[in-house]
Amino acid sequence: MTNGLTRFVLRRFTVAILFVVVVGSAALVLVRLAPGDPTDDLFMRGADAETIAAARHRLGLDQPIGSQLARWVAGLTRLDLGESSRFGLPVAGLVADRMRNTAELAGLALLVAAIVGLPLGVVTGTRPRSVVGRIVTIVSVALVCCPPIIGTLMLLFLAASTGWLSIAPGNFVVPTLALALPLAAMLERLQSQSMAEAFAAPDIVAAAARGVPVRRLIWIHAARQALRPVLGVAGIVVATLFSGSIAVETMTSWPGLGRLMLDALLSRDLFLVAGCALAGSSLVAMGNFLADLLRASVDPRVGQPS
Image (tube, rainbow, N blue to C red; front, side, top):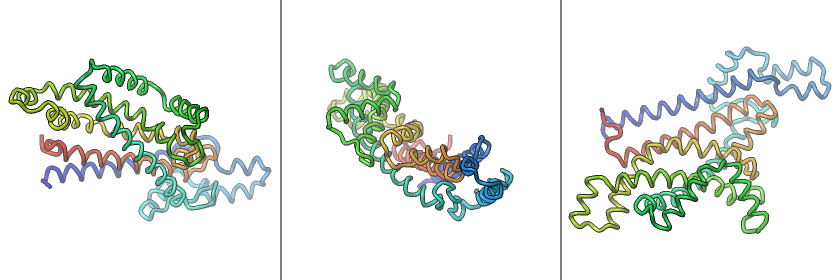
């Protein structure tokens, strides 16, 4: 590994760590500043002031925001994310289970999207006027414009009315398709535009003039060049994947971070919200970091001094 690439990796890793800490801290502060707290339920049930005060002290709600934030950040070094006021359990354990479920769903959706979207992008980029190219383009544009909620509702309706797909809680097929289809459409559109530009590049034209087979030009030389710009926006793709997973997980009863975050927000569970935000941002940062490494392996210019 060259010195330039090493500095690039270290810089990206440092930015990823800072991003995770800032997102988790911001979530804790915003929930603390929002109206209401976990002791509201005690008040509604008629608990006395002493009981409510004891609960606020146990949860640290009687402390200044700055002190509470400093203690929470210090606890990150010990993987101590506090205690959930709703479940009465350590947040780290609750979040770890749901984080694994979300990572599995997102990873499977990303794999399906890449397997479907990238090859179709190669086809539409090199043969945009073909029948297949026109059909794929229309479908991709429709999927990109369709909000995740609408797409999930359509899949749920299809599954319930035909029985082709299972809608049982915990089944991965519907949530995976709900995340993968719009992502595949996005990748297809990006790959198609990049492929059209790469296929018209002078080196590809010169290789064609030397008699290199068209299939080799398309699927090896041009496809490799076209992949670089797609990997350049991989961070946006990963962020889109995890932002859409919140609605998908909630609607399909998938036991992931999105569902847990919604429950935590509804109950004003301060440390659980911060823990979910920390875990979600960790997945996004990890995806961005891996995308940067993959981009650096494909494009030798990445990490080189300008």
